[in-house]
Structures are given as structure tokens and as C-alpha cells.
Length: 317
Ligand code: SF4
Image (cartoon, rainbow, N blue to C red; front, side, top):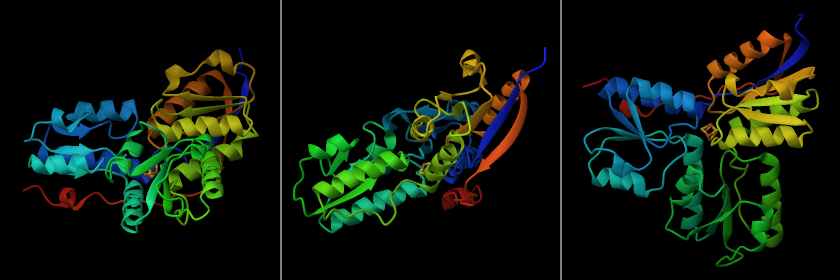
């Protein structure tokens, strides 16, 4: 039987961002430099495929520092860590490498500067996400107030309404965040914010590409992990931009083919922590069932690269 025709819109950019690329390189280079096992506090990036591949090479993933022996190196994930974590590693005389994305570190520095200037910080982010925990943990407990939604702004209890600043998680929905910022500005007109919001270039670009394809397609598949904030935001962006079926899949085996029956145009993208090999796997699975014509939806060209820390660039002693 002839395969049905399908127009496939492939988002560009998609998948790995510079921060994820760097974090994975850090683990690989640490394994080369110090040998296995190298401990990693939290999933280095939120993707099971990536984590399993590094585990096979000798990385050991733990949730807390006290699960690591003091005599093995430990790496902190790309999402960032509270200050107490490197402080504890130093107290235990551990070798540690911080794989926090430089764009997350930038937010940490912003929060610190505002605090030094006597401002109280409001963080827009998701409760319990490691990045939010890390950013809030740059300052003493209770110093940073968390808001997740516009409704939260109404119930905020601040120290002084005239002495406030806000920072955001880097992987939020651009549109939702604009709503929360607007609500903050209405309630606290003198609140100080970043020049450009803290949502990073990779999150922004991936969301723009999904918006650009949403009107053309009957369904969107976002390749990414359920605990990946930026991947889940891509699913929401697709749905809000008018696509009737916007779905997260970790890999080809997760695709609900029944739900795709009768479609003539499909959009595919991948979150910032999803490797291209999984995109290829999904494309191959689609091509087995459909007569596919691929069109690239390119809304930006990314040339961002981050260096790994110096300790890993130095030769093995
Ligand atoms: Fe860094 Fe953005 Fe990638 Fe997060 S999504 S690791 S902030 S570049």
C-alpha cells in the first residue's frame, strides 16, 4: 500500500544549546582527565538518553553531594546549584567542576548585584525546578520571593514595594513571562528588571520556530524529557499558537501513531537538552510510515559556544 503523503516541517534551531553542549563536554572531559567514576550531582541535563550514555562511560549520577565520596571529582549540573553546594564541596576538600550554564550564572550575578544594592528579589520561575532552587540559593533563605503566575503577583508580600528587582528562570515561556512581568510592573511600578529578560537565546529561538510552524501543521512533536522545562514550554507554545495536537515524546517509541492518522503536515522540534540522534530516530520512524517532504523552518541561526572551565583544558598531570 502506498504511504500517505506528509509535509514535515523541521524547526531550526532545535535541540542542543551551547549550555547543554558544554555541560556534556565537561562530564566527558572530566572522565578523560580523572578516569571513572566521576560523580554528577543531578542529571547533567534533563535527558535520559544523554544521562544513560554518560553513565555507560563511568559517570555516577546522584541527587545530593553527601552521596559522593570526597576522593572523587563531582560535577554540578547545567541548571546551577545553591551556594551551599560548592561551599560544602570545599569544606570536604573535593575536586568539583561547575557545569552551570553561563547564562544561568549571569542570572545568579544579577540577583547578587540587586541584593548588594539593597533590593529584594522576586524570581519568576517554577517551584522545585533545579534552576529555580539554584538561583534562589544564591542568597540567604527567604531573601528571594518566587512567583510562578500572574495570580501569584497579587499575593506577594514584599519588604518595601519601592525596593524590588526581578529575575527569571532561563527556560520559561516568553509570552507567559511577559504577562507576569506586566503584572509586577502594575503592582510595583519601580521594580527593576534585566535589560532583556533572562530567558535565554536558545529558549527564545526554539519557541519562535514553533510559533512559525504552528499555523502550517496539524500536529507538532517536541522531542524532549518530561522534566525538561524548555521542552514542555515548546509543547505549550505549539498548542497556544493554534496547533490542535502538540505532544512531547522522548523518542520514536513514544509516538502515538493513531493520534497522527489523517494528518497532512507535521512539525518536529526538540528541546535544548534533546540530542540530534533522537530527532533522526523520530524522522526515520515518520519516513517509514509516510511519503515525507521535509521543509526547514529556520527562524534563527545560532553561533553561540561556551568554553569549558580551565581545569579541564589543562593537560592531565
Ligand atoms: Fe543555557 Fe539556555 Fe541552554 Fe539552559 S537552555 S543551558 S540557559 S543556553
